[in-house]
Length: 75
Image (tube, rainbow, N blue to C red):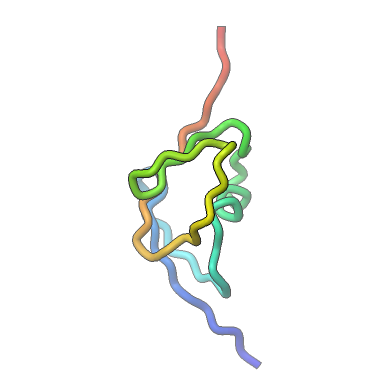
């Protein structure tokens, strides 16, 4: 039995990525794949800004534009 795969193309921090997925993908899965620490980032998805306290209900879709900003401490 073959699994159906979908090709999704999205922009992440100015780079275009093409991914084959077998089911709809949430943003937290993508963050885990790229090893981002969820506590230290701010996300802009298609013009909407999310922080770690916001639940992101949307699935990633074809043509999504993501910007991920990592917060670092310093002194």
